[in-house]
Amino acid sequence: MLSFPGLGIQITARVLAEIGDDRTRFADARGLHAYAGSSPVTCLRQEVRHHQTLGENDRLNHADCLWAFAALRHSRGAGTHYRRRREAGDWHAGAQRNLFNLMIGRLCHCPKQGRTYDELLAYGAPPAEAAVTAA
Image 1 (cartoon, helix red, strand yellow):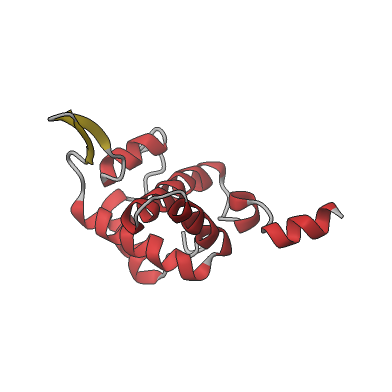
Image 2 (cartoon, rainbow, N blue to C red):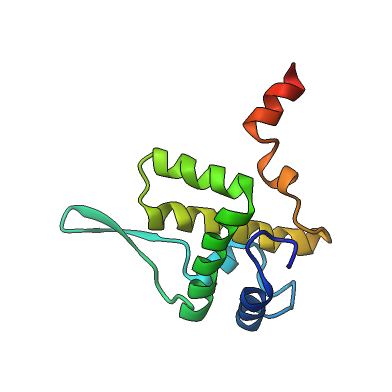
């Protein structure tokens, strides 16, 4: 878990304390998203669409917000993804939640595959490097 950008010792300890170390506990990332409360449920009330989360784990949700925020400083791919979401019109919290959803999906995937996190596999080559590689 420490191979993930932004996951230091304290945030990793919190995440492990909340989700446990059993790799089979969640069948897929959707189960982990639901447990963390990071997947919004769209409701239609008074003709206004809004998002809410049901049954979320507040401690895990808080650790994940810290994780996503820290990843912005430690991962070029995470920062690029966040900025792309902001430019598309997401507010800070929405862009950060979207980033967290990507990262928690990878957190679910990597241990099951027996791999550590790899920035290049997760986000691909940065645009500047991709242009140099293509030439």
